[in-house]
Length: 102
Image (cartoon, rainbow, N blue to C red; front, side):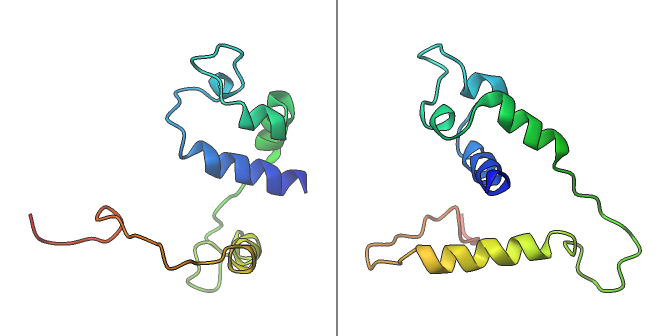
């Protein structure tokens, strides 16, 4: 449960434009993001992040470069499919779909 929360916080940090992880938990009103401290303390997040390690071994017998992450990725995909309800008001940004025009 804590690992999943730390992973979701890490994904959400990809949306936030912040130079340092500590700034997200800052008490300065300019830097703070109140959602993050409400989910997990900074020290607990950093402790989980410290122990989270993924290493690519070249001894993989298949072509799947994410073989160590595959169970986690499959779980995330299943959870997203289960909990996200696509509505008809969905727009696709031009940055998402590659085009060759100017």
